[in-house]
Image 1 (cartoon, rainbow, N blue to C red):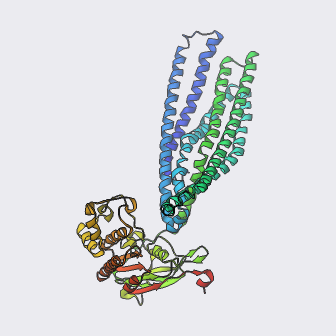
Image 2 (image 1 turned 45 degrees about the vertical axis):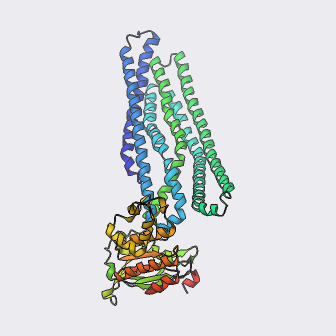
Image 3 (image 1 turned 135 degrees about the vertical axis):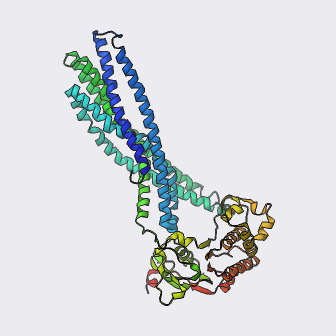
Length: 551
């Protein structure tokens, strides 16, 4: 845990120190109470005689309350720091693992980042401080009992091993129940996210109520898993309560009998009886809080798996990206495996600088996957992407894209996906701080100026998440305008005319021509004839089965 949540190390060390102080205060409290009661009960002293001791007891009570409050504050801070750091590391790991991994594990990661790691807070707030007390208060109290009365210490020593044995046995069931609970939450979240993304389509078809039964079944399964975890927790709590009560009762009976026969002094007997619960209370609390934090511990293991998987991925390159205005991009047998086949099959081609290159092929052939490789979001399973200077293309082996620093590579790229990322705010807020003059010029080239003319406030018009307030075609023009105004040397477009009419398509084609005249390299995923005709070169992309790919 501390390996991945380094920010919690300091608070945890402070929690250990406070646990040691608590152990000393527990001993002082028991011994002072015994010292005050025994002479008064035996009649050898009056209440006035023990007033200084009572003052000491009051001071110990106050100090113990302050230490408990400080321990809770520190453990809460440790929980917040650990959960925040783990969330950040899981997010960084999911980014490092790429879009292909996120597409497969997105729902599970969402569950982990929300409710999963949030359940880790009880581990730091409740379980860990009690574990510290087991390591401090329990041995300290047991040691003092041993000094005061050997037989009472022997009874405690015989009972103590039973508690972890039962905890281990019950903990096995708890871990399985917690894993079922997390898996159930992941399934429910995945189905819910899928339903939410497809809800507009379901409503359009009048089928929005169809998934109700399935979601109700998933909810019932989640409830069942939760109740199974609670049943185990209550069972273990009952067992621990029985063992601790039995052990304290045995010590009390043994001490009482010996007091009757005069085999132990009243001071020693009272001290032993008051210290006996302190021996077992931390153990009981550890068992009880273990179940409260079990879901979080299970989630943390899932987080560690993601982080370790990301650490096993090769580190990105460190070389500086060359100037793309004079660099060929060579696809050297680039292929990616997907579901037992290749999409794309190993593909080769040269993307020359300053021209428009189209990636052509049927749907599912792997055109978007090649683009993901070009964006350094994915590593091909076969082949590689090479950057080669055109001035020495004949004798220059070039540099592999995997050896280049991704940041310096992406700094020269503008990427326009089919569904552009738009944030709530004004249209101008979504333009990345580009100069307004450049935006006006780009808008005239892409036809976005006509869109602005129909809006109430032009560039200051407010839009919602994902571009709500603009049509699909208008969002596409906005993204194209942003790419044109950025003056990036390499522009990658994913079917930029997919949602446009013929007139708008012609405007976009003219904008791409403008980029070419400026000497920019343009890569287009193309299906329509107009885009194919606008391209200077075409790279055919296809999918293939394993045997075809290696044929």
